[in-house]
Image 1 (cartoon, rainbow, N blue to C red):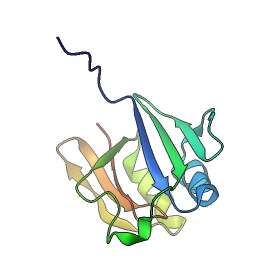
Image 2 (image 1 turned 90 degrees about the vertical axis):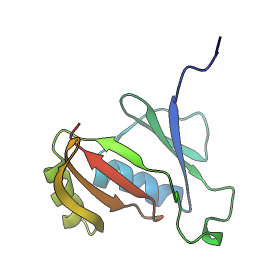
Image 3 (image 1 turned 180 degrees about the vertical axis):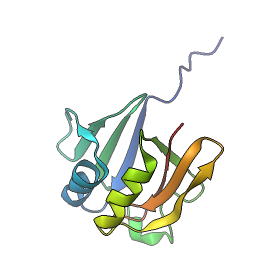
Amino acid sequence: MSNVVGPNFLTLQVRDLERSRTFYRDIVGFVPGESKVPTAAVFEADPINLALRQTSIDLDSVSQLGWGVVIWIKAKDPDGLAAHLQQNGVTLTKPPCDGFCGREFQFRDPDGYELTVYEG
């Protein structure tokens, strides 16, 4: 019998923790949570929390961060969030459209991670 439960936490390593904390809190709209690690920021999310951690590796040694991994963020109003992100200078890499999970779009964060927002 397996002892594996499933994914329980998502962490992105970032170049500038304060810049990324501000982006995810003030621009994307995540709610800050408690972090026991001084080099990390935690955001409360459902079903799993999102964390940012000051990088311990050379993020500039790869051409694109997170290549091959797709991070999906559920939103109540993807179109509204897309408009808000664009108003704040965030690059959308895929404009809002109808997808298999309802309305969706993609954007890049300050470190270049590409995230997909969907209605679900």
